[in-house]
Length: 451
Length: 181
Image (cartoon, rainbow over all chains, first blue to last red; front, side):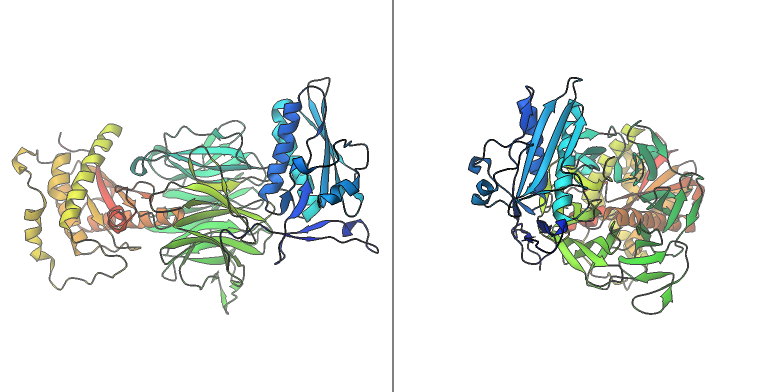
């Protein structure tokens, strides 16, 4: 089973393709059992202009992004032999083979006459002795304003990651979360946002009202979350660009546990009224809501499948909180455990299961599990098979997926009384690491890849 | 109103702590068997709780409700069932509310920290509703009772142990308006 401190490893497949075309180049495998991180060298970029420091910072962020995956072994610049790299020339592969690097990134930084900056880069397969084309191009050149430099770095890292692993990108994204301060009995909880690597932290609400469980829209610059504004829990929308906050719907009871539907056009949520919590879906354009569950048990924490056909949710209709799947249109479905029902239970292990979140790839559901005085983050197949626990501590709660479905972010209280922190773990269960925040933090949610 | 609530929260915390000290220590998960005796035997309990001079308390005041009636009922792990102790407190609350018909209350349901946020919001709402339903069954008009759930977000005890968790699984009847000052 997983062990938290297991080394961060990944297998590389060096296909020295004779018969195969370009796809047989250097390929980093993310799922294999026998892991060895791929050696990669990212020397500082060539600089045209005076801002050597900024050029170095960009390279640092690229290196940090790739290192954070646990899939790469970042080579020490002090060991580099070739010091006269040029983006316009082939590197001396022999020099890079001596230090046993598999991949080499050569970058160039320019300050443009209009004040913007541009970064170009190429990716080389050292043992294959050839250029690795990116989206069919021999390299990429990205331009932006100087204050936006981190996004260039994230986009470069995304390109390299995607080219080497075949996975979709996820560095050029943001996390929204709840920043927490103050003693436990008088906690201040604010909506906060930051880049995926923890840079550019900002608060979005004042802390006057307790806010919880923010989630990103898959299609707009909006967040849905729950706030105690006005005294009772209600679901709101928050526009990141305008700062405008809007109450969602006119439900008689309290509303909470919001999450956008896959198409971003609706929000799933729970309403509690007269002691009973059920799941609803509200269309954001028409503002009409439809009830999805009608059961005297607690039904909450809905999350929709990527194809929009199904909703996984948490219910205690079986006596303890467990995960169930229903059809979005309310029709009965064939349950993996046999028979047809409007809601099929998928968790049967020991313990209590809650906060299900459907993977962007569709095949897995992440959850919080509580058993024997501990909390776990895990994943399970949509038919209830293949449960795997990825993390364990005194309190691990509230998983959310990176947009490419490779990484899960969650919050953790390491020991009784400790404040919550953000952590991430790879879907493989390896590479558990802290996501740094300025304050205690909980309820992280990942944005889609920025445009 | 905010400061009023705060002050009453602080007072309630003290009262709850005092009450806690006189209660048997809470036990996790063990289902509490219904007591073999009927509710009439509880007389002694009122003697035990508070050495307060009742004469100095204005009848119908916030303090009267807090000290002589009791603001909170406590729940077993994962439960929203009201046991005979809870029913006793709610009966006193109902009698008091029936005596002071201008008083409006907010019943806040709370959960301990050993559950997930969203489920606990639902669980807190269940607890608040259970307390409200009981008050209504004793003749208090439903329109005088609002409910809210704070889930695990507003613990009254800051510890991470069985005692604190037992304190934090509660329904708290707070007077919103209409009390004698």
